[in-house]
Amino acid sequence: MPASRSARRPPLGRLLLLALSALLVLQLYFALRIALWSVLPVSDTAFMRASQLRMLHGRETVEWHHEWIAYEALGPWIKRAVVASEDATFLHNPGVDWQALRKAWIRDHTRRVERDHRIVGGSTITQQLAKNLFLSPERSYLRKGQELVITGMLELLLDKRRILEMYLNSVEWGDGVYGAQAAARQYFHVPVARLSPLQAARLAVMLPAPRFFQRHLYGPYIDRRSYTIAARARDAQIPR
Image (cartoon, rainbow, N blue to C red; front, side, top):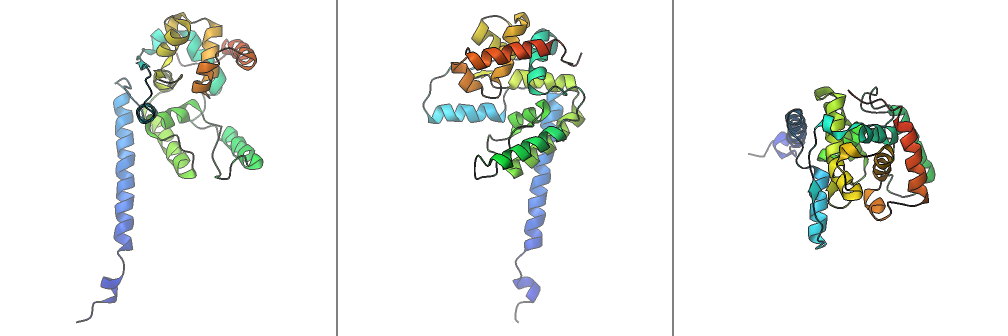
């Protein structure tokens, strides 16, 4: 008896259902991890693991520095400086600054610096945290879409205070240097709570390119930018 037309047809519907189910499971995993981090410290992130693999493959010997510090113990200046430098509307935006994202998209496509249509700039602190926690450093529309979904989860499940606390405790400040406490001790040999406004501003300025500024902590650009951020930090709005 000849096989029916439906039997010969590739099971596209089943494959699509499996793909959607896998995608849903992945989103549930992200949401569960975020819910756990509402009460537990972040011990590692996707960026940390990627950095460890890069060092391992390159046979680099780098000391690892990472220490979780409670929000109150971070002191005022690193919070203010990072908000002033990275996301001035952090306290009031919904996790995404759509206007900044649109400007970055236009700038990127106007310049055509690369041919792969990369997504650059315009990221809020919550978006950067989403990327650091779960995603690879690769730039693509697919990864940007997943970043926006995770950003929504972070804003839904956590308050701004916890988001900033997690970000400051997990963001990279150079090879093997993660979190504000490790950065303060590495570059200024003091606990993060004892950073001066200018020292905190210098750390904030490092964030877009931490491995570069790790080797160029002082220079005309970073000096000038640090003074600007230190001045802005006094008026920066941060969670209480």
